[in-house]
Length: 329
Image 1 (cartoon, rainbow, N blue to C red):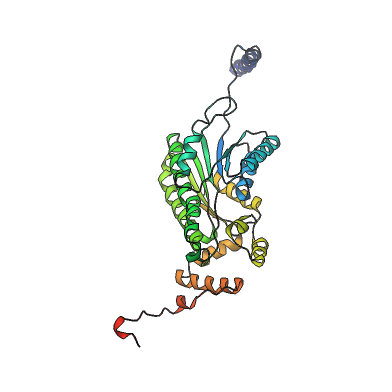
Image 2: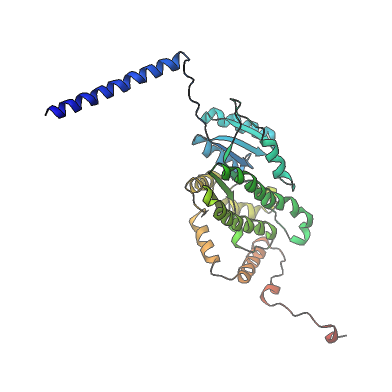
């Protein structure tokens, strides 16, 4: 009994001693004797943040307390968005205008970003990279020609180099997250979306491979496969038929819903996620049906929907080229 009483006294003394030290520390902070510890909030870099899913991802992450560096073509839209995020969520948001449609866009963005500092004058370290900038290109490949080059820069070259540059920084700091926005078109050889679909196939495969390379260093890479999302991509991508736009809007997912799913998957460390149950079913089906058959089916369906004269008979039965000796006169 005496031992228990002595133990109780020691515990009570320890509790009161802790309270006394806490009071001393509080007083030292109030009088400036001890400087307050600064908390470093995480920073995220989002490309294509002025509209669509990039804008909604900015809202979702700002709501979770992330500071943001937002890049897009329109400085005016970025400034309006940054003010909106700062006022609504109390975070720091920095607009950073950048054109990502050139081969050296990523290197230029990285070099300009290296000198960026926050309001307290501290160097900003990106711990979350979101590659959401993208260009949709619609039309026959032989007619589009050089128009595909800027799209390939935005969809392929720029995210690849940004992942390499910021991924190396994350690797050195032993942690970070990369989120690449892909597309359901990555699983389909889609006529009229040939170059766009191919660019998203690259992003999907690249993200999965990069994930394995950076996993030992605590860096997670996630690829989101989205179907139709209600954004301005149809208008910008050259989809002029009003029926096609109505189809996208009717069967599409809202940008906010897609952003919430994408952010949740990235923060959970998932390798990939497909937005929508129907889209997930289509993705599963695409693994069973051969590529040539998928291309034929899509060619037929697109020719019916768009009423365009797409020659899909060559996909079903290819004619053998005549030999010079067998040419009939």
